[in-house]
Amino acid sequence: DGTFSDLDESVQSIAIALRRLTLLACNKYRAKDLPHKVYEGLCCYILREVEREDKGSTRFHTSIFALPVCAINIFFSQYETFKKVEKGEDKYLKLYNLLARLMLQSWLLPNRNDATDLKPFSVERFQNNVWWEGGNALSYRPTFETSICLLNLPMFQIMLTVMQNAVSSTTSIYGSSFWQEGICADGWGWGHGRQCYNNGYPTDSILSILYHLSLLKEECYHPLLSSIDWCHIAYYAKAITFNVYKSFFPPMMSRHCFPLTPKAITANDGHAKKIAKLLVTNFSKYLSPSVLKEMEVLEKEGSLALKECKGRRYFFNNDSLVVKTEEVFCYFNCASSRLKGVESADFMADKRNFYTRDGSYLILKDENAYKKAMGTWNVCQLPGTTERSLEKEEIQSETNWQGYHSLFDFAGGLTTGNNAVSGFVYQKSGEREKDGAGIIYPNFTKEMLGVVAQKSLFNHEGLFVFLGSGISDTDPKFGHDVKTTVDNTRCLNKAKLIYQGKESRVTSGIYSEELYIVNNGLIYGFPEGNVEVFADNLTTDWAYLNQGNEGCVDE
Image 1 (cartoon, rainbow, N blue to C red):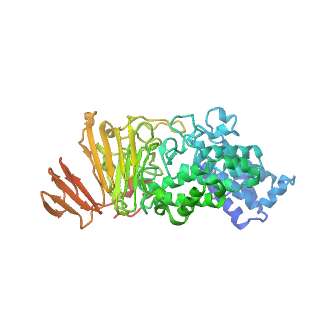
Image 2 (image 1 turned 135 degrees about the horizontal axis):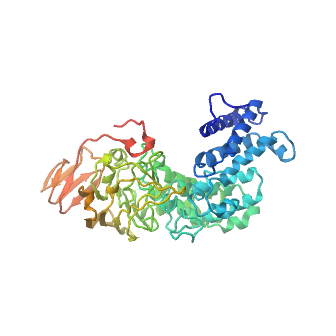
Image 3 (image 1 turned 90 degrees about the horizontal axis):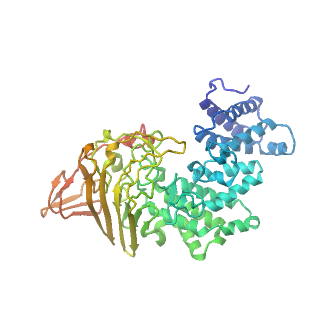
């Protein structure tokens, strides 16, 4: 009957079986007659999948991403045969119909429990739900490919309309833009709702849109193609390069802040180059001469070769000030109630990235200054944050698809020439929201709450002045001291400490007078106050930070 003797009838076995059969159909039997057992196996396992009664949130990754992609690959592996089916031949008709049902799961599942469940083949299906926006809509679901395989013109037109609108700017006012994620007016992106997310969801969707539109014949689709703001996409490509410095990717966004070998290390420059290449290769006639030249330079030489990808920028939709030059990089993350935090998912990604959008910052001249040091971090001691001082074991891992944001709506900044300024008021919100499946995850480390701080940064050329005031503890019942972490980085052997006019190696201690530390090409100056310096050899604990680091070797 085509079933595998080592598999049972569980949902997991369906996915395993269809992956095996896809490999057989696409590799060993591509453009050949399928053996009877392979044919029957495909029909059997696809039927089990499409006849499953549960249509809710459990039908996510496998049912709408992986298995519909399998169906499309199988379809094209037997393309000539299926073309004959479309002309009326009976051979493989049963499999053709089952593959079509499996592909359509990318449009139909999961149920949203709204009007679009009754009208899934509509533009509205791709709005107002994170399951159907960004990369979830156009990259991971094979929705576009399904419309082509099924030769369904209405579905294809829906896809074109979605792509046409998806490249417009999103907004924080829910419902007034096509999507609640994507390209922001400031040039950066949102993903999974109003989360600062330059890589992943928004970028993946832009790359998919550019690839899909590149397949269209210009003479047939000129009205559509000419209506798209291509310079806006180029603007995004340039802007996202501000989120990477050489080979260092700051841990301020996405649920992969702390992977040991981050795919995102060169992702933003790499993705920007891909966007630039697609624009230059396929849509150059729609770009202005100056923008076309910028994209050509970006594609060939990278962001540091383009003056538009350096300097000082305040990303107002994302509460972030970035200073990026050849010599120095500073990412100053403000926070407000207008923007979500960074999502965490301890079963598959970051376990404890709760403080990365709490007003943290990174400042570096050496791209390696933080790479290994991050693996040793107690996450309540991120550079720039003012937090209750908790032990690592007191901070529980969690899944939180909205992340943490500030209770206050104030955050702002501006730049001019070699000058920049930014500031915000912070108090972590403990609000718990429903995820896309309507689930609220109630358990979290409540001791993170109750700390208020006002922070600002003034920058002039190579001088950075960080100021803090109004620090208070509104929930003293949680105990623990409240501390501000100035930096948490690699300490070089040649680092120096200057105190009371004397120069020495950096050593742990509390210093109450004017203090200077020289390390990693930077000079830290503390004019007054009690400054606690901690200098020691620490062991990394990458698995504590990200589930993907399980089993890695620490050092």
